[in-house]
Length: 291
Ligand code: SD4
Image (cartoon, rainbow, N blue to C red; front, side, top):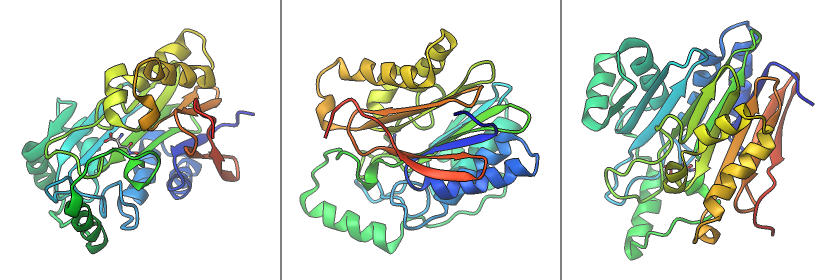
């Protein structure tokens, strides 16, 4: 049953992220601060091979990052194809707060980050570099279902004031083409919130989410009266009604303003962390394909 405040996040790294986000909310702070603090935990984790520091590089060995953030007023900020900055979500927040723009990309995003006082760092850890070197022996690029190269963190939170915000951050698909941008920094694809309705976020093969504008679609379906669960299922159906979905994963989370949530994926194996009151638990999402 729904309990407010609530924080929900993709995958098992969502547990630690939720913890950090709920700590901020418990102090009476805003959801926007909570979502940023939450996903920063994942960004800083070198053992996570798909977000921020320690993320797997593109096929040329560069770690390139995508992130976006959105608040209860409908303000949004995003960075894509950003290199050398450990906390892309905080750069996205600065784009939202300090510029008249929504998205900054590549060298321009890096320049802005440095101007804002972020430090330039090497994000390619020895562990990620070693995996990339092994991959290079065959250099086969196949998006694989549900393994570490598909675990972006998307996080949605409703604070004590009843306001919703969201954040999403990733190093994107492992061994992608240099310059490839996924769904995660695109407002309405990887994440979207509307304080009248709720929010949604996505993980998985970004191209499929981009082509269906998944998060925006799910929020609009909730606006029309679907439950968060029904909306996630319809979001997945828009993808599975086309060819080829058997070979990749998409996972959606949705949260409405009452604090009801939904989760659905194409393949079994998607899980998410839900933090309500004193419980923060990892839950397996139902899926379109069965085991
Ligand atoms: C992307 N959606 O860049 C991201 C990757 C991802 O879990 O979600 N991994 O396509």
